[in-house]
Structures are given as structure tokens and as C-alpha cells.
Length: 506
Image (cartoon, rainbow, N blue to C red):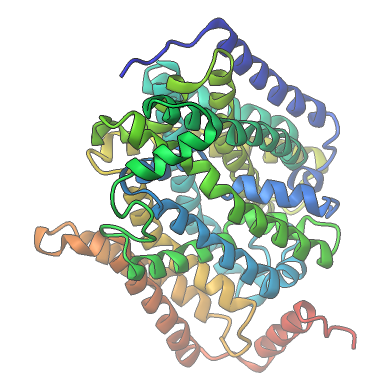
């Protein structure tokens, strides 16, 4: 398997891409006059732009890395996994869009203070940060892997370069810069996603001794392994898919940067339209994304398992002409930069609005902007540091399983109280804190018990997620029974629900 080196034109494309991203950040840095504008609290974002940004934030270079590795190995399985996001987003459109827009004001979790308690809001900000940072670190590790394979850089410098550039344009322009960059990056990814499958079909035709796209498709269907189009394979059973659906649904419904996309839209109707657009994009995208990795199973059949995380970059360098490889690498950067930039901004919003401003209630507009940008830098620095920890800790484990283990511990105790808090009136105010802290404690216990060889299976998502989720739900109910609301507290909860159900003032 011969891989071509990057040409000067490829590097020129990549440099131009970074220059545009930084230019957008500089442009909006002069227009973000307040922290509300920096974090999107002014609710002025068009639905289509918010939808594209949501879509770009819902995946990253992990799609090019771990999902493509699964496509090369199993075939259709990552498409099945990706399509689980479609019903999750549709459910969000029907049941969550309006509620999120009414509930959140200054940050994705500020409603927690009025629905539960101010103490839980601060605790969620503190305990929720590890999951957000770990999620971002996984994505940064993925882009570092891609760039390391695609550009020939050492992984260490790939991670550093990626992290610095992402932090820079997020620091400069805030949410408006992030949204604009998301749209530009979306166009770049579209160009790559619609071009690469045709290049792979031509290579398939060559490998089959013929010409034309139809012959390439014929060769593909004739030579793929038996069971390549099965919806499930190996450990990725229907039970696994069900658990993963619950996990991805929780993520898409409560991830801070995605909640931010709901409440930053111009109207409640726009919030729903945004979600419908996202669902359509999530349905169309996966087969196109993963076809190159599937096709590579035919014309590059000898990629060892240890190198499968780099299969997408290997395919690109094998079939694309000069200049297009640089475009693909820019697209891979685009995917992760969109996701990380959105998360950095959302995390910074939580740090500033739920932590800093609770300590400095008289902060001026200038001090708030300084705090917003400092929080962005601190978030980015922590993510880069965690990325290196994960790089050395993951060993032979793949990124997909590593991410699932992380989310299995932290996601249910954070997502379930957040969602239950905007749907279930009867839960008491203090029940949220019981479920949050207790759920994470249970998840960590399960994870550490899984370190014992006899119980190693407990670290798999199919076990740790349901156990942690069930424990969190039980603790919500138990917390309500043990710590019932007083009359004044119940009145506050009722007032909160009247507002998000549109009954206030009637």
C-alpha cells in the first residue's frame, strides 16, 4: 500500500482554511460587545444557521476516525449507530425544543437554580465540567490522530496545533464566530463528502478491471464480505444499539452546546425547525460519510487493525488528487473545530454565569467579557492536557469504547435530572442533587469494580450505562420521598413549570 506525500498545494489549502477561521474570529471579536452576545443569550440566531451548527456540533473527527474504522471492519454497522441520532433529534424537536428555549436564559443549566436549587446548579457546573472536558478531549485526540496520519506530523504536535487554533478563534469571536465558522466548515465537508465516494468508485472499477462508476459499484457489491450490510455485527447487537440510543439521545438532548443552539434561536417555532433540519442531515450524511471506508475494504484490504483509526486518511491519500487531500484534512479539522468551539463557548458560559457571577455579582460588562475569554482559554487548556492523558491511557483500546466508558459513568446522572427537571413537576427541589451526586458515585463504583478481572465486563457501556441510569432514576424518586418540598418551594416549582409550559400570566 503506497501512500502519497502531501504536496505544497495541500498545505496551501490547509493554511488558507486556518486563515479564514481566524479571520472570522477577528471579525466578530470587534462585534461582541457583551457577554450575552459572546454566549448567544440575545436569541438572534436564524434557525437554519443554528441547525447547521447543531449538526456540526453533533459529530467530530471521531466520525472520520472511530466510525470509519468500524465501517472498514464491519460495514454498515456505523450507519446503524449514526441513524440512532435521527429519532433522538426528532424527539427533541417534539418535546424539548420549546421547553429548552423557555427554560434556559444565560447558560444551558441556569434553569437548574429555579427548578431545583442554586446549590445543585453550581454542583452541576462543577461536576458536569469533567464530562464536557473529557468529551472534548476525545474529539481532540481523534483530530490529532487524523492529522498525524494525514499530514505526517507527530501526534503530540498535531494535538497541540489543533487545540491552539480552536481556542484562538473561539476566544476571539464567541458564539457568532463559532456559528459562522460552522457554516463555512459545513460547506467544506459537503464538498469532500460528495466528491470522495466517486473517487472511490473509480478506484473500485480499476481494481475490478473495468471503467465507470456503475462498474465500480458492481465490483463493490460483488467483493464485499458476507454480512457487510448487516445492521449489527460482533458485540454491536440490538441490545447494544438500544443502550447506545439511550446514550446518544441523552447527549443530543442535554449537551450544553446543543442546548445552547435551541435557546439562541429567534423563536420557539425556529427552535423546532432547526431540529427538523438536523434530523434530515443526520439521515442523509452517514451512508455518504462511511462509504469510502467500506470501499477501502476492497481496494486496500490489508490495513492492520492497529491502524484502522487512520483508514479515512489513508483512503484520501490513496485516491485523491493534489489539493484535494488538503481539502479533506481541512474538512476533518472542520468537524472537530465546530464541535470543540461550540463546547468551549458553552462551557465558558456555564463557568462565567453559574460560577464567576455568583461570586462577583457587581461585575461590569468589561469584566464579564474578560471572564468569558479567560474561561475559554482555561477550558481549551484543560482539554489539551486531558487529551494527552487519554492518549497514554487508552493503550490498545479504541476510541469508540473509550468514549462509551466515559459517558456511561457521567452522562446518566447529569442528563436524567436535567430532563426530568423540565418534565416532571412532582420531583422535589432537593431530589436533583441526590440523583446527581449519588448517580455519579454509583457510576464510579461500577467503573472501579470493573477494574477487577472477573468483573471487567462492567466497564462496557452496555452494563455501566443502564446501571448508572437506573440508579439515578431511583435516586430521583427516593430524594423526593426523603426531602419533600415545603409549601414555598412547591410554589416556586409550580411557577417554573407555568413558565416553560406557557401558562404564566394566564
